[in-house]
Image (tube, rainbow, N blue to C red; front, top):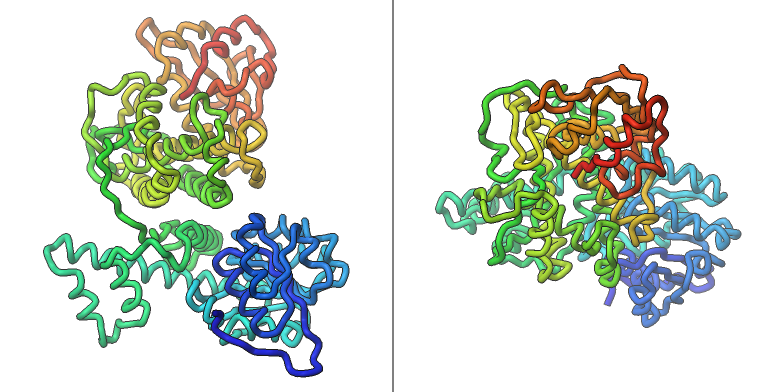
Length: 579
């Protein structure tokens, strides 16, 4: 039974509350709202998740608009800003009564302000109201709500709802401030969880009983109920019934680091974009480790220099930022995919949607635990990919996702460390694909995640009907930079012989760049890619399309225009296949 019962007083109007999103938090809040004597109309994308609320007296609705009709308050408890905005647009036809919109999802401060602007367009009053607390306080009705609203009468209008779901409401002055405070609070939570996990792991590694860590903290100035709650559960491996989904923690960590980058505080590590790593289950597998196109190559440990110092490209944070951005977008998509959709064929030939994630999980796993070289594996990189994906075909969806969730944040942290001198410029050989400065390995991950997510998983080319914002320059440019660095190296003589005179590649739109591809100097030389336009034969395409056709996902003839001598460019374009 829900934790609190606050019936409305006799003769008082019984408010009707539309609850949009009945996941862990939304369902608990809906039950407490109903138990407090308020009317509830519930909607969830997966209706089956909302059906149990009918037993608590709620009306389960088929659409957001239906749920909102006649409501005095609309409470959104959804995954992220994008989903919130989409669902409220879908609810538009049900908002004629101008209900108060209470938005509880954790978003960035700018996201909170964008949603307030959307509320203004929808002509509904808005309360930004992120929540402090996880499943247990949500069920008990003891959440803390951080709130702000542009409307003067908001506090009284939403008071019955907030009292039903929480034990404390902290009102702030302006929209955006609740989200700022929530991110600061979550930074403390994630840092605490990571600190507990790392301390317990360190103790065990050093041969000390990890239980003693909890014992010596108990009663000290550093003790807290959180330590005493989470620590024993970690030691007992009690991680199968999480109070808060790992995907949501990763999303919040991304919001923290993205916000810190935009407004870095002096000395704050968030400005260095180090994503906290929520603690997940450690599993030992009997299956072989995967070796795939490496964001850290086989036999290359980013924590140990392994090659002579060499010249590299310009070191910036663009590659790692792009890798984090695309990984965060994939993390937004993953919870929306159901078991049937995981089995759908992707646009990557021979791979299902779950196989694409298995491929990315393999890269991440290998990055954090580099295996020794195995000469029995295929030398051809595409066959190499298939072998490592095939090793995971017997795994459950959850096992594949668990590997990806566990390893990807650590992979990103390693790649970020590779941006630092003096090792960032070291040449790193990627077997079969060439040699790259160590810092450019972050761009390989940016390319890999972006390309698979945008071209193989999501519509219109893939089968998943989810949408993301249009990609911007900061996501596309690092992927293109890696592709151009790999272009002279990946295919060898068969591509080299197709270029007999300089060819300009002019890429437009997000990720725009212009380079000239020069013929090899001598029979054993490589093509050279130089900045700028220094030839009369020019191939023009958008950079986004280049990612698709240069990897042979799409025919180049549909996306390129050639000026000058087409006969000079055509053999090159026919042969090009960047892996």
